[in-house]
Length: 145
Image (cartoon, rainbow, N blue to C red):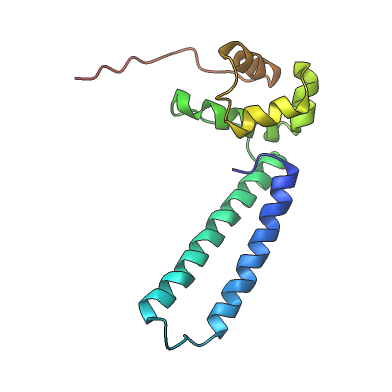
């Protein structure tokens, strides 16, 4: 998941490099010392990586331009990524969130790098409030049989 502009620029550059590499691989003849199966696997791996990078870029761009109005939580485990997505969708940088929270930007970077694993529950609640998020009030108990 792309979390900031720097990562966005780096990922876009990676997309270009993968695209160029795939064009080269397509134009090259398979070396005799590499099996056809391995050659195809290498191309498929590069194609899969390219698709994953493109998806990350597209998600970040959608969030940035306001293409996402709702971030859905399927479970509480989704909350950290939802906070990051909500910040981006709100047009807020990590620095902007840090300012609103009254902390250093590096702390927000650490929170997001660890997907809020290093944040206290109280801090997570403050981030939720600062972003203006509404979390459903219903909590469903699932009993293991």
